Image (cartoon, rainbow, N blue to C red; front, side):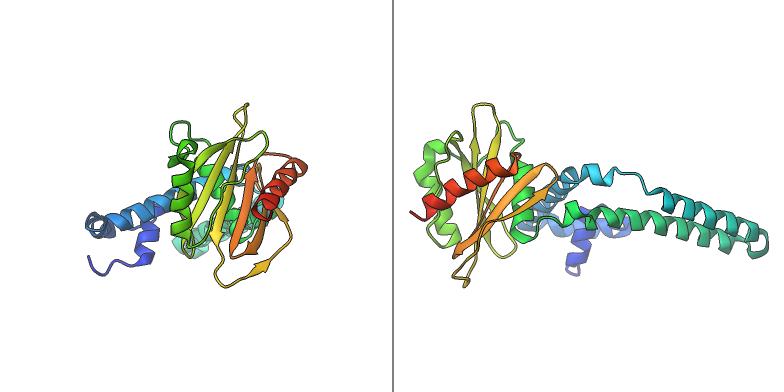
Length: 255
């Protein structure tokens, strides 16, 4: 049980772990609740990414790949009698290779590449929590002072929840990040449309960057660095609308 590796854990999350190894991993997790929670967060992020790119993943393979695979199959069938069973495995491998190549296309497409780093993480967090009806946040807006103090302490700096015109604060939550905790504030307008502000520590940066824009599926993201924090505002708004809100956020954080 002590020889369980991170590779084993990732394979377990993805459903790719050999059955013979599953009992060891499950026993390992049963003794480590914190690891179980971490893997649950990975599953949530994985499912959100799949939902974000469902339209790309659902695209059929291009006709040229289908025709190429059929041509390979036809050529190899003529040699099956002479080559025997081994040729069948070669044909199967080539066909699987063509399919796998198309699956890789989905994650290397312009849509999937659009949002680097903080923008992609913010979009995934947005897609994960905005559909929640009963538990969209950990701490509600009625406890804003506590929320801000808690997130500031966990992120190691002064965190604020800006006021957005037409989008009252719903509340916020703490999220796991690549290099430490991350804050997420959620806002909602009268029609139920939601925006999220993703805030993470950028230790040692001391820099400022202009707004940058990325898109993950239907979710637009404006992101920037302001001294010790990185910010990303996400929402299903047109680019100009989202930019106007991001400008509000920036002005309030830099009065």
